[in-house]
Length: 449
Image 1 (tube, rainbow, N blue to C red):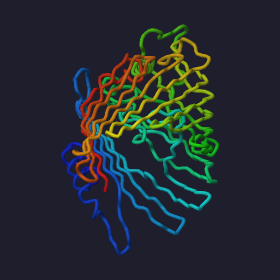
Image 2 (cartoon, one colour):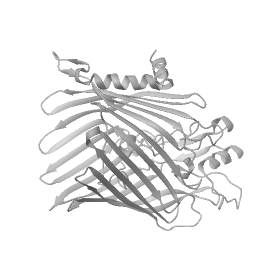
Image 3 (spheres, helix red, strand yellow):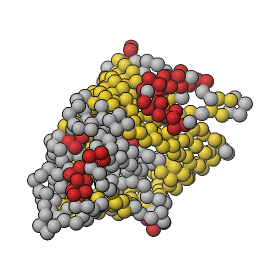
Image 4 (spheres, rainbow, N blue to C red):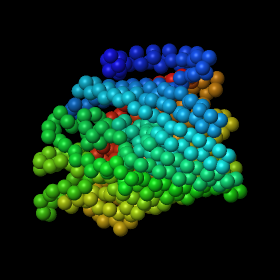
C-alpha cells in the first residue's frame, strides 16, 4: 500500500505538487494536539525535471525526485531532548520506468546541553569550515550524489550516526566527533542519466561493481577534532580528520602489459565497458586519509570574507597506464567574499584550487592544478515576493562549467517554488562534462509544515 502510494506520487507530479501545497497551507494547524503539546514538523521537496534535448540513446526525458522529512522534538528534561525525524526519498526516471524509494532515519539524536558543553549522540549533520558552496574541509558527513552536483551542498548532506561533543569557553570552542561506522557518498552507479558510470545497464549486460567496504568495527571508526575561536573581528579554526574518502576510487584492474588509455578522453563509462570486455568486476575502494584543516571568516567594510584550506596526506587517482591507482598528497583551498546592497542585490564569489603534489602526467581526469570559481548573484523583488538567482561554476583547468538561472517565489507562506535551468558543458572526460547531455528545465517545490 505504501509502495503504491509512493509510485502514484512519483508518476503523477501534479499529486506531489498538491500534497506540497496542502501541507504548506495546513502548517499553522499541523498534526497538533494541545493537550500533550505534540506537533509534527517537517519539509516536502518535490523536484520535477525535463531534459532539454533528446541527444542520447536510452536518455531519460523526465525525472522526479520527492523527499519528505517529518519528525518531532521531545523535551525529556530541561537539558535533554530527543530529535526524531524520518525521511522518505524517492526517485523516478521515465526511460526505463526506473523507480527507487527508501525510508530511513534522518536527524535522530539525543542532545544533552550544559553551559560549558553539549553532547549529541545519534544521526546528525556536522558542518565544518567557513566557505559557502565550495569547501575544502566540510568532510564529516557524506553526500547524496544521486542527482549529481545540481543540488546545493546543504541539500546533499546525509545524517549519519556519531558522537559529537562540544566544549565552550568564552570565544573558544572545542569539538570531538567520533563516527563508529563508515558511510561514503551515495550514488546510482548505472540506469540513470546522473549515474556515476552512465546510463548503461540495458546495453551493457554483465557490468558489476566490487565494493571494498570497510568492516563495521571500531578499527574503521573515523575521528574528527576541531578548535575555533575569535580574535578581534576574525573567526578562525583548525581541524583534524582521520577517516576515509567519501568519494570511492577505482582500484587495480587487470590489463595487458604496456596497456594505456592516454589521450583517449576515457570516462567512467569507458572503464565500465572495459571491465565487461575483460570479464572482471570494476573494483571500488575508499582510501583512508588524514586531513588537516584551516578556516577563517572576517569582514572588511560591507564585504564578508572567508576561506578554508585542507592538507590531505593522500588522495586516490587513476593512472592511464595499466589502469592502476595512484596515491598523492593534495593541497586544496577555497577563498571568497560576499556583498549585499541596500537594493536587495547579493553577490558571492569563491575561488578554489587543488594542487596534486608529486604529479605525474599519466593521471586521468585531473591536472596538477585545478582552478575554479563559484559565483552566485541574487536580486530580490520585495513587492512581489520574487527572487532571481544565478549560480555559476567554472573549472578553468578542464574548460567545463555549470550554469543555473532560476526564479524563486515565496508568495505563499511556507511554500517556495523555483523555476529554472541546469546547463552543463565541458569535455566528456571531465567531472562536469561527463553529464553535458543532461541540460534540463525544472520546477522545484519546497514546503515546510
